[in-house]
Length: 257
Image (cartoon, rainbow, N blue to C red; front, side):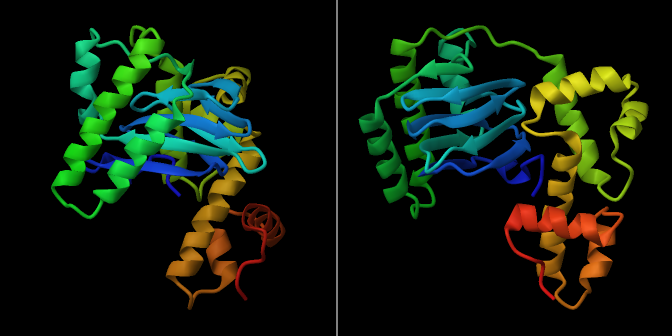
């Protein structure tokens, strides 16, 4: 449930899926990530830029760039992410340039072939890493033939959002109102509201309640002997009504008795 996806920090980690796009909360990690929209539109937010991707369009998330996805209907996509080490040599060959945040890429035949190769070699403990590394080189070469790469940019607001999300995750039981967050980080309430509106796909209170509901869900599974009331307060909720509304909204069911 982490804002900061620690599993993506594992050495030589990679993930390559062809799947239905489900709602993904704003998060970040050190891995490099691509999403290639295949079927139906899908809403994405990358480093504060919101866009509806149409089939045949893609987005690129560099390391530690906050991003979120929202599927529309039964949106399908190829999602590829991996340890930045897989990409380092390729980016270096392009003068340390990167693909643009949004671009067109509709070579689904190539994506399907590379996905199949990586899937077939998944059980090969040694070879699967080399297979994925080769797939990255082939894919980026194909992208570069059709899309001009651009200079890597530093975004201070994106870095602040990563810091903020880390803080929130570590302080879910504390006051996380905009006023309290403004005091912690030294921003005015108005300025912080503008940043959050840019990066978040929903309002701040709704977002925090979703995170707390997910945290409560993980505790309920981990500690079945503990009461729901005990866990909801431990998750940062100040009332059972708020908890039950947030939990049902997030999981479409009531928490266990």
